[in-house]
Figure 1 (cartoon, rainbow over the protein chains, first blue to last red):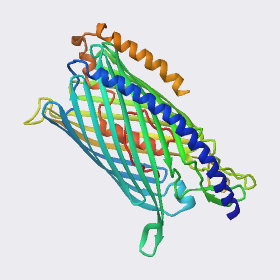
Figure 2: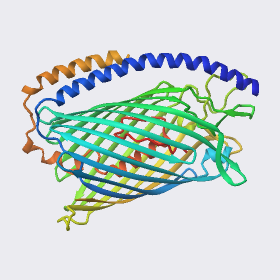
Figure 3: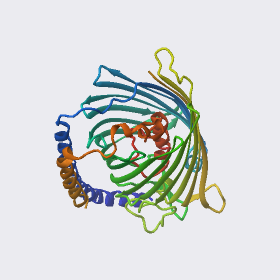
Figure 4: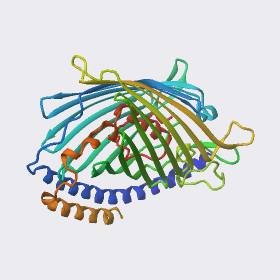
Amino acid sequence: MAAKGAAVVAINKSRDAAVQHNINQSGQGQIKLIWMLAGTLFMAAALPLTAAILPDERIDALFHYYNGGGITVQGPALQASKQIGNHTSLSAKYYVDAISSASIDVVTSASRYTEKREEYSVGTTYLRDKSTLSLNYSNSKENDFVANSANFNISQDMFGDLTTLYMGYSKGWDAIYKTVNTNAGFDRDPSFEKEADRQKFRLGASQIISKNLVTNLNYELITDSGYLNNPYRTVRFSDGSTLSEVYPNTRSSHAIALSANYYLPHRAALHGSYRFYGDTWGVSANTLDIGYTHTYRDNWIVGSHYRHYRQNRANFYQDFFDPFAPQNYMARDKELSSYNSQTIGLNISYNVIPQGWRMFDKGTLNFSIDHMRYQYDDFSDLRNPTPSPYGFSANIVQVYMSVWY
Amino acid sequence: MLKATLLPILAIGIVIMLNGCTLKPWVKPYERANLADPIMSFDRNPISSSYLNHVYEAREGARGADGGQGGGCGCN
């Protein structure tokens, strides 16, 4: 087993160097193009224009609850935005995931655990004529994972405000740790500390087609480099032995999404969106989401949606590997396997202060419930004596209130 | 490959942009009441949609172009 591991590592090093070289080359070309586009947009932003708006001044407080597949995740989220003068808006967000997990991965290879993830973010938006510039910084912490990211976005209204072009760039820095079960409980393994860098490039446009139809086209390129494994997960060989997963050190993905909203008489709306996804690990996916929003009297909004997701596996994913033919990269993460998922959701919103009250213009109470099902093609449920494809369903409940002031 | 796709888009974009000043909006500002209704927003409840996107992203291989920009992981 040790020899197998060493051989895998040696092959990985040369393969990674080649992959890195290719990605660097194509990455530089992509970055250059994106800056050319940025330059064009900045030129457009310098023209004498009028309109565009800052984000609404609002406060949102949410409680979320997820239960399914042996996992319970719950916690609060708070978000607020405030305008300072006529050109600047500030925003802040706090979000918590309190996780209790006995998922299929945990049950078959580790013990049940609980942990907490906290996320803070702050941002500012600056409005100048028909352009908005926004900056945002976010920090997320859990006991074995720390993520920091800086985000930049610019948008520009044009053609009589029928078109909004936008683009953005994000840079993220992750630190990955591993917790081990010591006498004093779970603690970080001091010998394990890894890093990963992430970059995101966004480009998109919203287009008003008619007085009842608006569309949005959105493209995002994401490149990751560094330690992209999960430090706990293992692959399985058909002889029953296991080995830590081995992932490439880089990953680049493309996602393109087209969405449309159509206004119906009697104040209702149809929504549709489609996303295509592909990456250098061989994962491809299609996402389709359709929805209908209905209003009742002046103060009730009822929304419903159906989402279908289909994914084809990474080319180094296998349910069981052949012990006599080890591969350079090996994964048995079910998120990299082939599967379908469906979600159906309903949300209800009630405006409790339609006439406004004191400093508040409007305030809504909201409730939403989503039911999800995941069915895997080639990820076996090892709890069964004769492994069969794994699947699970989950329910998500959100209760939240929003006030505008 | 991406370069081959993006270059024509860039060229078309610049041409449209240069002509843009003379383009007349075919949906007049006073005809946009329906579009301004909150039910026509692509992101009516940002706190809820960013949460739901996080739920999907933690369970699915695909990522990006969902309107979010977040960080974090929660990949359990």
